[in-house]
Every structure is written in C-alpha cells, then in structure tokens.
Amino acid sequence: MNAAQMPESDPRFVLRLFVTGKTPRASAAVANLRRICDEDLDGKYELEVIDVLEQPDAAEAARVLATPTLIKMLPPPLRRIIGDLSDREKVLLGLELRARRDTQTGESSGS
Amino acid sequence: MTTDRDDRQVVKLPTGIETFDVIAKGGLPKNRTTLVSGTAGSGKTVFAVQFLAAGIRAGEAGVLVTFEESSADIRQNMHGFGWDLAQWEQDGKLYIVDASPDPSVETIESGSFDLGALLARVEHAVRRVGATRVAVDSLGAVFSQFTDQSTVRRELFRIAWALKSMDVTAVLTAERTADYGPVARFGVEEFIADNVMILRNVLEGENRRRTIEILKFRGTDHQKGEVPLTIVPAMGIVVIPLSAMQLRQKSSDVRISSGNADLDQMCGGGFFRDSVILISGATGTGKTLNVAQFLKGGADVGDRCLLLAFEESREQLFRNAIGWGIDFERMERDGQLRVVCEYPETEGLEDRLLATQRMIEEFRPNRVALDSLSALERVGTIKAFREFVIGLTSFIKHQEITGLFTSTTPSLMGGTSITEGHISTLTDSIVLLRYVEMFGEMKRGITVLKMRGSVHDKAIREFTIDGQGMHLGPAFRNVTGIMSGMPAYVSPDELEHIWSKFEERMTQRERRSDRRSGMDRRRDDQ
Image (cartoon, rainbow over the protein chains, first blue to last red):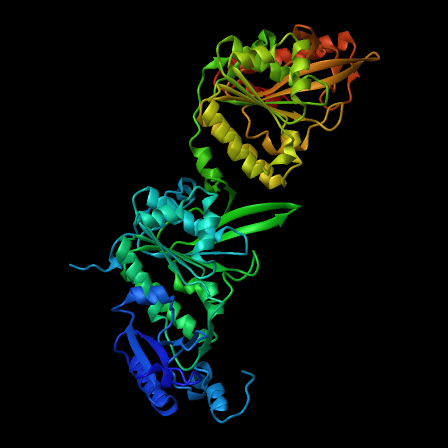
C-alpha cells in the first residue's frame, strides 16, 4: 500500500491486547474488540493478542497489571482500556473514535 | 505422602533482621504471608525492603512488588540504608516488579477484569531469580489504581493464595489511617495474610515513639505487645526487645574498685564487676566526683573506661577532674578513657541506646559511666526512659562491664528523684550522697543504700572533698532524719542508749539465722 495515498487524518490503528490464558474473559475481550474494530475501524488496524502466561516479559515491559488490557499504541496518545471490553461506548471513547468521526463529518474539533 | 502444609509444624524463617527475630521467636513463619500494617511514615516500606535485603545478604534471592513508589524512587530511597538494590538486580539476586501507577497514560475501565498480568509478572520474577522471599508494598495502593474495588479484593486474595503455592515467604504491607484502630484501611488486608504485624509511629508528649507489635502468628509463638524500635541509617529497622535482653544477664562475684578505698570498704570490698551502680544526690554533692574516681580506679588497673556526659562540657569536666587530682586528658591519651559529651536533646532515647551500644561494642570498655540519667529523662516519655535504662543496663551487664549511673535529686536536702523511682529496681547497688546541715554548716553524707548480694556498711558517713578527691570521715552518729532532709540532733546519751538496744537485737538475730543476708536484716530493722 502506498503511504502517500493514506490521508493523515486516517491513520492505521496499532493495538495490543494482553490476556491471561484461554479464559472465557480472554475470548470475550478478543471477540468484543474484533467486532468494534471491524465495525468502526473499517478493518484498518493491526491487533496483537499477547498471553501474559506465555510472554510475561511483554507484560513486564508494558507494565500491565490487569487482564484483559488493551493498549492503543498508535495513533498517539497512548491509551489503556482495562476489562473484557463489553462496554462498547467506553472502548470507543478510549480509542478516541468519537473524535475521529467528528472530523470525518467535517465538523471542526479544534485541530 | 502428604504435602499438606497444615499437617506439619510451622517452620520459622530467620529474617536476618536479628532484633526482629528475637521478638518473632525465630523469624517469620516460612512459606506464609505476613501483613505489615502501619500509618504513613511508620516504616512499612523499610521493613519490606529490609526483609529482602537481609535475605539477599544471606544468599536468598527476593522479589519486590512496588505499587506505590516507582522502582527508581525505591532504589534511591533505600540507598541510605546501605541497600544497593540496583547492584542486587544486576547480580540477579533481586527483581523489582514495578506496578506503580503511570500517570502519563490514561486508563479506562470497560467490563470485568482480573490481575492476571500482575500475577504472571510476579511468578515470572520469582522463577527468574529463584526467589524465596517476596515483598509487596503496598496493598492499599492497588485499590487506588482501579475503580472496581470488589474485583481488587477478590484478586488480592487470589494473589496471596498464589504466593503460598510458590513456596515463598511473603511480606505484604498495608496502610492504616490511625495508629490505634482498624488493622488496615480497606478491611480485607488482614484476611489476605496468615500473620499480622503492626508498625506504629505515635506522638507521645512531643516525642515520636516507634513500635512494632506482632498481632497474630497463625499456629506459632511470638512475643506479645508493643516493642520499641528505631530506624537508623545504614541499618534500617532495629527492634529493641527488652524482655529478651533481661533473660541473658550474667552475674559475677568478681569485685572491682570504686576508685576510692573507703567507699570500697563500705561496699564490702568494692563493686561487683558486671553490676550497675546508681549514685544519687543533689547538685554539688559529688556525683561527678564519684564518676571521676570510678574512671580513675579503672584506669589505674588497666581498665578501659567510657564516660557519657550529658550535663557538663568537656572543658568543664576535665577542669573539675584536675581539681580532684584526676587527669582525664592523660587517660584519654593513653587510650584508657573515652569521653563523649553531648546535649541530651541531640538524639531520641531509642537512637541514643543504639548509638551507645555501638560505641561500647566498638570501644570495648570495662567500665561505663553515665552522668546523669536525670538529664536524659527529660528527653523522652517515662516509658521510653525506662526502656532506655533497661536496655542499657542489660546490655552492659551482658558484656561484663561495670556501669555507674548518676541521678540528680530535685531538692537539696533529702528526697529521691523521679529517676530513681523508675530505675532503682534495675540497679544492683545504690549509693546516696546527701547534704547534711549541722550547726549552721553544710556537710556531706554518703551511704550505701543497697548492695545486691553483699553485706555493706549501713552507716551514713560524712565525707569531704579536696584536691585529692573524696575522703570519708566518721558516721553521723548524733543526727537522725538525714535521708528525709530533716536532720534532728540526738543527745549522745540517748543515742548511746538506742544503739545499745539496737546492737543487742542485731546480735540476737544474727545468732538465730545465718542464712539471711545483710540486706534483709536492714529492711527488717527499718
């Protein structure tokens, strides 16, 4: 894909989801996130699911305590959303998708 | 074969904090969790890190989980105690799991969660360094990082449970809002751990008093009640376990000279070597003189002497001693004397006790004199003062050192000081110095009130002071009421009569019973 063709206001989302093992809570979080991403990000995202039992070093490096924890790496600023992501509104708020939609519809959001 | 822990006896893990192990009767219950609860500034973090540091020094690796201070802050703050956390981390003896909040990242909660990542990090850290000790500081700070408190509660239980299965001995700290009140702020911390300890930092009469109390050791023994402690640089927490010290005292029948032949005679041949003598008297009666003689007497036979002076400056002391024919400066030059002059207010009593003990360990004196206890009394509370005296007496007795303390009576004539009331039972011998007013003249009297385990002269004898020191004269035979401060004169005839009666009775009694000591007789006759 040509990067120049991508408008700057529409960056790709880089997401990391930390979960513990194959628990129901972990699969719920993954399913909830995928649904939100497919519907609201038009599939323009990279998602890495990290199992803290397999990669404790990654949890250590990211200083994660709770699982599931979703970290929005890009676009900045860094945001964390804790929980199984069942509260769709809060997830959208955390991903700052509300603000993004506003700019898409041409409304000023103060740059 | 069963591996159920409850089937076996609780094993104690010596923490390496020696003074703590005394009150914990061996250490912390091994492979169990212990809650250390306390108000802000009570020393929780210090205890937690010291627990790990002592382990590392004994070859046991540790993991520190910090929820409150960042790892960088902890490394810096603990450096003053001589604990080089960064070095230990480098050497693979310590792992710090930094779970402190990151204020730069905004966090939102959406739905249910657990602390699985934290648990995974802790387990990983324990495996990584092969830790047998874990310290978590502090539980309360976990609550402040999440809004869903019931989840945090549940998860803390799960983590405590997991720690037990990891075969580590864990210390968890928790905050309290008051020094006397609920064990910890969130009301659950005490149920998470097997054992509970409380650290206190109470303001008592303008003085801070730190104590430690073991509230609960599940299934095993410990000392009860609050025990004073102090936090000192380069050492950390030092507990001052009084009852344990008292048990170890020795007793010898070796006599040493008081530095004055007459006084030795009054005491039945001198002081006992590992005894503590209290010299009590009003200002100017000659207490410091007795101290000086005691030190000189030591130096003359090659003893090393330590003088802790809280009433006079060094110059004053040395000049006065010269006036009695005693050269402190020469004694110091010869390495037989060390004089420490300090204002009593410069240190709290707990710190003073520790500093004194360290000084004694370093200088290794045979004799220690302290002038005066009364000056120290005003520094702390009565309780702290009593603990100081108990601590010092038992320490010096244990080291086979002779101790000479002075105490100042508030009134010029007669009377006892408050100091004496608190410490007279702790000392082995008491010598009283008193002013005696006779025919318009002030005279000085001396008497040996108590001499544990020995006969002694019970007379009140007059003494004079000159360029050669103290000289004992005859007994005040025709005066009564000296000790009460109201001397009255008795005509020689009457006196003769009383004494003959008295001595008659004494001889009768002596014949009746040889077993009883001179001290008992004296009490009966009073």
